[in-house]
Every structure is written in structure tokens, then in C-alpha cells.
Amino acid sequence: MKVLVIGSGGREHALAWAFARSKRVTEVLVAPGSDAINEEQGCRAVAISETDHKALIELAKREEVSLTMVGPEAPLVAGLVDDFQAAGLTVFGPTKAAAQIEGSKQFAKDIMKKYGIPTATFETFTDLDEAKAYVQQQGAPIVVKADGLAAGKGVVVAETVDDALAALDDMMAGRKFGEAGASVVIEECLRGEELSYMAFVHGRTVIPMVTAQDHKRAYDGDAGPNTGGMGAYSPVLHLDGQWLKEAEEAVLRPMAEAMVDEGVPFTGILYGGLMITADGPKVIEFNARFGDPETQVILPRLQSDLVEVIERVMAGHDMELKWSDDACVGVVLASEGYPGTYDKGTVFTFPETNVPERQHWFHAGSKKSGEDWQTNGGRVLLLSTMAPTISEALQHTYDVLATSAWEGLFYRRDIAHQVKE
Image (cartoon, rainbow, N blue to C red):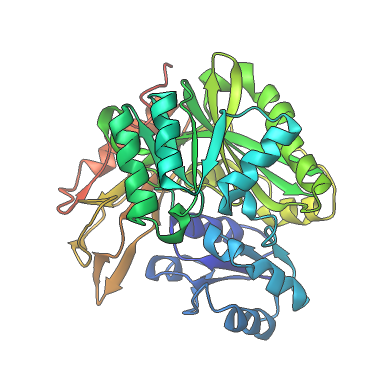
């Protein structure tokens, strides 16, 4: 069978790589894909934008694609799944209505409130003055979120009232995130450790994955602005034992059930971004797709056939996923200036891996010019490493990264610093 992956980033590179490993798959098409994905064995990039629904449907029909998976959130929120379904094509992802779980933070928060799914207390505002008055009444620390999609950057954890007020000005008056900030959600600041917990979902069928922990802040010591993610690791053993079952039973399964009961059943990857607080797991956000960079450390651990998993969940059948006991670590290399302004076109070389069968370069924002690789985005590369322990995986990863000067790029040197092995 042929599989089509929609998207072009590091997550889609990892998805294409995982699908290509399936014995069922003859070829993985990726639209628009990237130069790096095009060099992946069994994969072919096709230069069609993820916004061109008509051309994507024509591609799927022409190539006799058996299964399509949508990687990023924007085409899901834009209704790409609905269009594929209307064309009689098999696609794994939520409809436009169900993708509101990520496309509108208020939509997700209202469902959580209605069904008693643990989350931070919140209020939603469309009036700047009212939002500011609420912040001044509540005090800090407090969290300000753009209601719509903002590429993972529309969240400000404000340690002072002035910071929160400035964030509101940026989002609501300055339209820093466009119409995504026309409405904002202001919520209490949860304290604890973050945990990414995802599941394959189809209606009431929920098959949880292993956990991962992302590092959102740009710099070492969890300093600097929020990013799309600077690195991740899996599993998160110091949180899994006590909280994993509770997170499944109190968050993932109830949300899938609630979506069915609300008349917007969810199909695809349900991502629970959790804070493990002193009172247990609470939801920071839900996403409607695989996390990035979590995908790059979770899929290498998956030993079950990805195609079989998706087919079984779409048929409403439960299954026990097979996972490697090994750990996986991923470190992101980003353009200097990210998540703010940064240059593109910087030439870079990436070194050979030191354990090739256990390591993989996943490209997020690169392009090839002749024989040269150039930067073409904020997050450029991720080196993913499997090893028996987190510390060994880190050692192998940083050993490789240390062999290059990485001019014009930077990376965090403290990924998985929370882990005590």
C-alpha cells in the first residue's frame, strides 16, 4: 500500500520514516515534504502545499493512496480531513469540528469544565480592558493564551502583572498572532512538571502511547521565551509510575468520550499536554495531532507496525502496543534568534552519527542547495538517539553534536535534566 503524509517538518519526517518501516508500505508520499524527507529510503516528497486540498485529493487518487495522515494542526483546523472523507479517501485525523480541541482553547476548556476533566481555572475574554481588569484582580503568576492557533508560541507564563498586561497588548491590540489573539484565555498558573501523553483515538476507542517530556523554553535552565520545543525524551519514568493510569482514566479517555457525547467524535492523535501538580495531573492544553518534537522520540520506540495500529483503532479494536524498553532522547538545533526573528540560508553540515542504527537526523527547517544544506526555518534539525538509559542516549547525542561548531545555530545542553537515574 501507499501512504500519504501531509506536512513538511520534523514531525512529518519522523512519521514518514516510521511508515516506511512498515512491511505493508511500498512507498510513503509526503506533501509538500522536504529535501531531507525526499532522501529518506522509501519516501518521496511531492511539492503540493498543505493548503491546496484539491491538489492533495487528486494526488491521493492518482497514486492510489490507501491511507493519509495529516501531521500539522493548521490543515486539520482548515477541514482537510472533511474534504478527504467527502472524496471517499481513508484519512486518519480529526474533522474540522473535532480539531477545535486545538484550534480553540475556549472550546477545549468549556468541554473540560462541563465533563469535570482536571484543568486550570480560567476565563475567556474578547475585550482588552476587561481582560486587563481580570489580570489585575487575580494577580501573578498567571497564564495568557491566544485562543487560536499560534504555532505553539501563543502562550505567555507571566510572572508579574506587568508581563501579563504586556502580553494582552501584544495579542489583542498588537495582533502579534493575528486573529488567533482576538480572543484570549487567561488561566491560573499551574506548578509542577509537564508531561506529554498521547493516544491513538477513534470515537470511544483509545490506545495510549508511552509518555514523553518536552522542553519548551529556548535556553538552558528552562530560561527564555516559549518555543515549539527544543528537545524531548521518552519515557518519563519519574512521573509514569504514579500518574500514568490516573492521566489515562481522568484525562484521555474522558475527553474522547466527551467529544462523542458532544457530537464531535475525535479520530486521530489526541495529545494531552499535562502538568503533574501536587493534586495530580491537570490539562494545560489538548492538541489534535502528534507533538513535535515528542514524535521524534516516541515513534523510534514503537515496535508495533504503525499502519496496523491505525487500521485497528479506526476499526474500533483495542490493542496492546509493543514498545522498546530502551529510552530515546531528541535534541533540537535551532536558528539563532528563534523563536524571534532569524536568518534563513545559513549553510551547515551535520556530522555522522556514532551509533547509526540507533540514531537518526530528523529535519524540521532545512533545504538543499546543490550539495549544501541550508537553514530554512526556526527549528532546523533534531538528533534522535536510542539507548538502554536516558543518560546513555544523552551521552551519544551530545557526543555527536560536539563534533560541529554549528555556526548560526544553537541547542540546549540540558535536555532531560530532570531525570535522576
